[in-house]
Image (tube, rainbow, N blue to C red):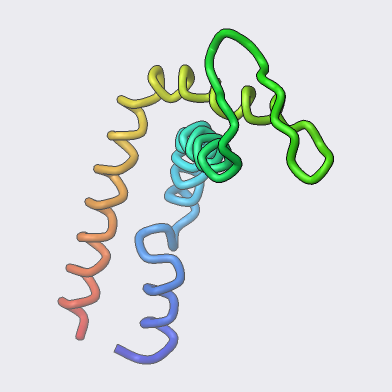
Length: 109
């Protein structure tokens, strides 16, 4: 396998064709609420601020109140619940695509 093919495989893998890029964008959008939810939980843990569904709690950090931001980020968890089946499908499709890309690359060398 020449250097350019290897670089393309490592950079794009199964996403090297135009159709796969659209699916990758859709998968990224499906996983975005989970990323936002995890970010909100991490910020709440780091700052020691309470976060719950009842409402916005004050959370002063460096002179700014980020309670509203934390509340909004952690409420993404409700959207994540609805998107779990789609997220699992994208995970399985990504693993299958990576396996196929490696299989094809192995067969060409």
